[in-house]
Length: 116
Image 1 (tube, rainbow, N blue to C red):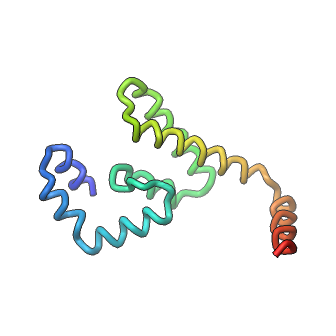
Image 2: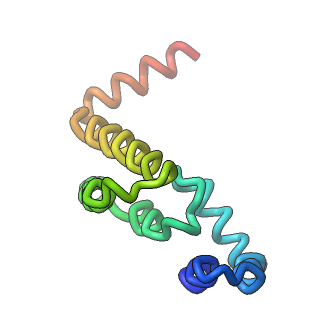
């Protein structure tokens, strides 16, 4: 994918499309696009690393990514700005889930099942 991204930056779109249209690449891209919360997984391959990390590592990786985006504040495109907001929301959600105790999660689970 990195090769396809570099070809795309050089405006060699046919070669980039050929790499992206290989069946293996299409399958893996669609799989990770569904598993992660990133639509443009081709542009942000670090999302796969974040997906496989544990919760504490996810928070650290997201924090590093947010810091990178914050440092380049003047050069942010609308996609980068959306990504920054998305990462911030995901980081807050994961840290909020970590703060819940096992008993609290169990109570939420049982009360939700009783409503069904």
